[in-house]
Amino acid sequence: CIRDSNWLDPDRASRSGGSVRGRLDQIASEVEELHGVPVEVVCVGDVMVDDAIDALLAAGREATMNAARHSGAPRVDLYAEIQPDRVDLFVRDTGKGFEPDAVGSDRRGLRESVTGRMHRVGGQAVVHTGIGQGTEVELTIERQES
Image 1: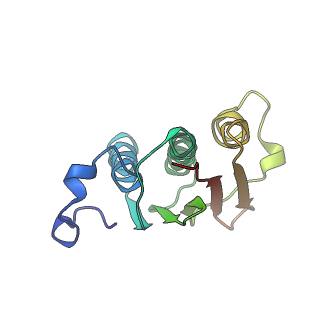
Image 2: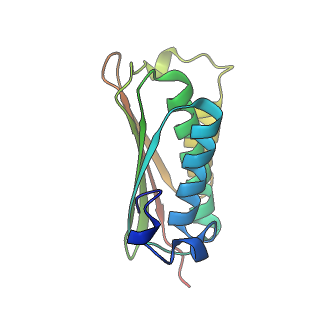
């Protein structure tokens, strides 16, 4: 899904908030409003949000907020791929990067709101970053049987 291109996706308005695409649009709008950093959204496929996917999206929101606040990047990219057995969400920036081991124990955003949240619902969070390399947070959750 590409935000602000409703003519490409005329059903988007009816999904708003109830599907992965709708929630990603909401996250992007919120981050842009709060931090003034553009968020580009691409979503391959779509599915309605269940409890596990809700946790993935909450972790993705936190990672997007962190990127907008701390990376110094001119934009943040959200890429989601809906597969039959899982949902993958990537939050990427081309900012300054960081050393995860150097993050103070009092800073819990990445540790609890991203990685911890994903582990609590049986998902996975992997952070790829380094000083001067930008950051990618890769989130994966298995889809629940419906």
